[in-house]
Image (cartoon, rainbow, N blue to C red; front, side):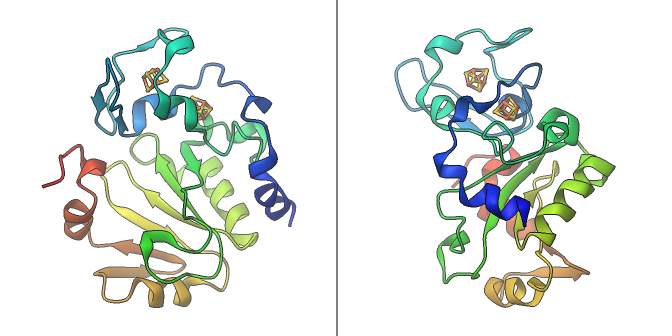
Length: 198
Ligand code: SF4
Ligand code: SF4
């Protein structure tokens, strides 16, 4: 319940509520595509050319996508101990995560996006704890593993609903986790694999 309340208030929280400190998880793990003068594209799971010991060497002039993006932790929606470099999970709210993920009909509950910061981190106790906390608060997570494969970690009582929502997408269900076929993921979301879309 506490987390639900946090999520509802996300939009009203100042991004400056916290500072990144030593964390550089998003700069290394996520796809960054900057379409502006001096722009660049960075593949998932690779260091950004601007990463430096103290964070970003162009921080004051960082590109628009970097300015506009923020993870849930820095927005104050997750406990201190869940900073992405420590928990292994980078979580964010996609523009349409309030029940309209993937652009078809709604799933009727919040679905966050997430990316595992390094291989196997999703099995670390802190990551497991974070996912359990979200699931108990009726929040599902579409988690991108370091392999590029997507897995839905479904909120309590919502697994069948998410499965129904995914329709004929090739998948494998294991408990409250729905693994999307990795070949389908590679075709549908090539950037998650460090590949260009066709
Ligand atoms: S993942 Fe979050 S806390 Fe870490 S560097 Fe990015 S915005 Fe900062
Ligand atoms: S430009 Fe700076 S803020 Fe943006 S991804 Fe690179 S290091 Fe991170």
